[in-house]
Length: 244
Length: 246
Image 1 (cartoon, one colour):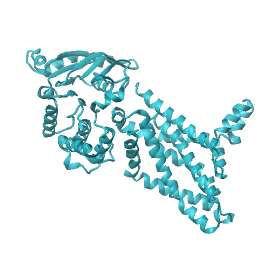
Image 2 (cartoon, rainbow over the protein chains, first blue to last red):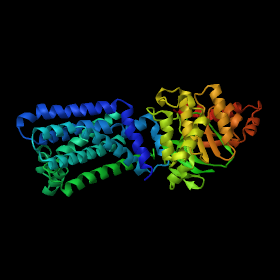
Image 3 (cartoon, helix red, strand yellow):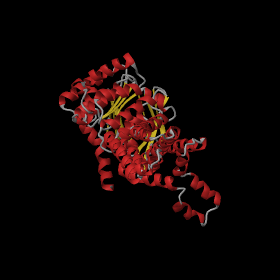
Image 4 (cartoon, one colour):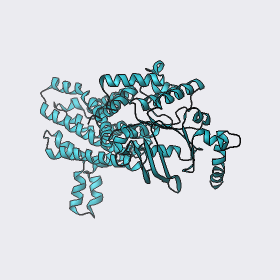
């Protein structure tokens, strides 16, 4: 357990050592604002809630979270520090978890910095702050799920661009797996339970359930098991590549 | 103490290391020699737990690197080839991170870091990002990282590569100073380095040991009494053949 902290803090600080943290946060906040106010017509709706704002989160995460995750392992491989990292006496699970938690904490920080919109909506009306809190928690969980996919993909390559593109595609499939676009392709031939299983992997479905204000344990478990699954795969990939 | 037992590694059709066994005892400084591609780095990568061997294993102070990896790595200081380090960190931050990973905290961590900084002569560059440092300084950052926790076993892959003659001299006296109670393996291309600091020289070629003796005994095998003549004799024919095959 004591190994988790050095890995986490080094990784977290590394975001701020380059302009990456600044660029990411600025673009994240700018895009959130632009989507909510221009595309989402936040003012014109005349409703004091943040459903428009949260509705864009999955689509923004789709591109921004893989950008955050792509360097996690690919950069270590490219620069050779992988050899240093894996010959230090750190259990592999601590390395994998520490890196993931650092990226997740960073995503959480970016999310917290959207608080002016929460202040705005409270100034304009009387929103249900319970729903907003639940939505923030749901959004954070979903960011973690996207990140675990990105971390896993990053561990399989030393090329950050490849890591980014594959992560975006994988995240996209998880996002829309409940949409007709995907389900129709299966419905014609696959048995119903399979179609339902595929649609139950949809991030959108689990996230919108939470943003309606109910934190159902099943949705929370979904996101956590997905994170666990991809981090485990991440471990296996790192371990497998040790055999050359 | 390092016990390397029957290490074997293949990369596809190429046998990088074949059935290599070697025991190094405390007080020994073993110079690991061989032409490029002979399997020096691959052997070191397996002995430190970075690469999984196809067969065989290595024991570091009795701890098996394959089955008891963390315990073995705790007793080990390793300078990988090219001295990789996190470029955006300063040597001070980097060594602080290493101290944390080595389970050192508070006064222990400070003392260990001070000692490593003094040993590797890093004082002048402590607060500059590692990526802005010269090759020589980067190598010394890697060295400081390897000796930080005062390990019983040191494995150094080309510790003096890229250093100027003064820095080479400094690193060699550092290694010589630590040699008394530690087990040290260094790989190098510099035969004069072997004569200067090693108590034992092992030459490998195509993944096999072709010579294992003291540097003086080895040098005496050539009529000229020069180590590089022996090295060439033992390794050229084979490398010429691999060159033709490739």
